Image (cartoon, rainbow, N blue to C red; front, top):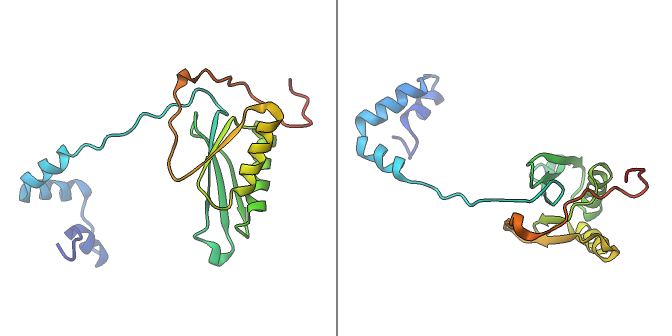
Length: 168
């Protein structure tokens, strides 16, 4: 190995290609104990439950392309893991995040809860607080962790129609 990289990766850098299975077989031949130890490592994954669609949305922004004036805001439904909305804007202002959120709300309705990190989602938090004040039982969870919601929470999971729509 060179500087911690597998030899196959170093060989790819100089144009020599090795099949992945041949590389694995070679590592098993050379270091069978290390392979066995790595196979025993088991990462524990938490269970994650959301009772119904539109119950919890996860929102986040990606501003790594800001140098080129691309800021991406994404919204994912916690139940189905489907991206509800993706928006690209040229700034990372809270108004841009709110406008993208309102676009998703017009299409899918107001989610019961929103989970986001602290940052450009300040206006989304205010929107969810005002929606909660209007009796729609919506809330905003800020922080850098994911909240697991039990399906035994007893929440009503009906779709809330966007303002001005003819849906009942």
